[in-house]
Image 1 (spheres, helix red, strand yellow):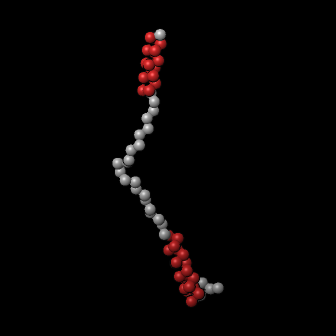
Image 2 (cartoon, rainbow, N blue to C red):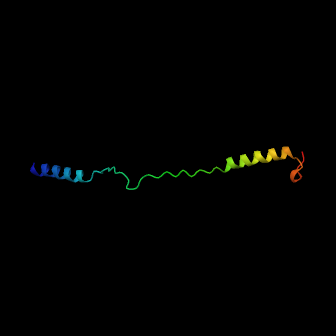
Length: 66
């Protein structure tokens, strides 16, 4: 009976040593969010509108005719 109790206690220690642990820790470096945004399309729209207005004012400019 003592051996059975001894084996149960020993197996309890062995099983408790194998339980996984979860650790939560704050990162050492701060979180960096990169907000590089291209505004290429906005510039193209403005240039396209300016060109359209320029061609409307002088349709023969650059040899373009309607």
